[in-house]
Image 1 (cartoon, rainbow, N blue to C red):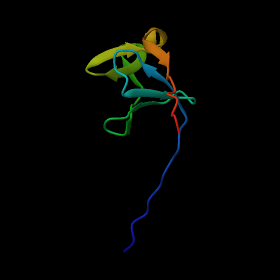
Image 2: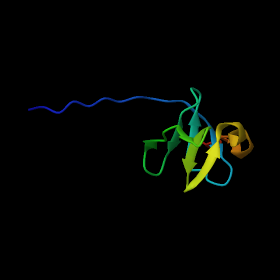
Image 3: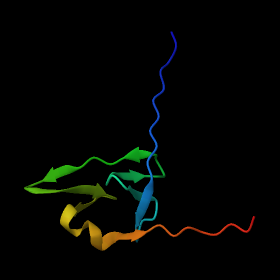
Length: 76
């Protein structure tokens, strides 16, 4: 029996300031690039957000933690 592989590509645009291995795509999905997993959006009480490094970050506060990914110039 052959295995089936499904791949998806995302354009990563932002990262978290303190945790740069967490990246955010243009379609607003958050990924952990160390484990190559997509984070799930959850409800904690009545607040929607994400659990990042055992800390709950609500959606309305997430912009305070984000910065644009800086592209490094390659000399060749």
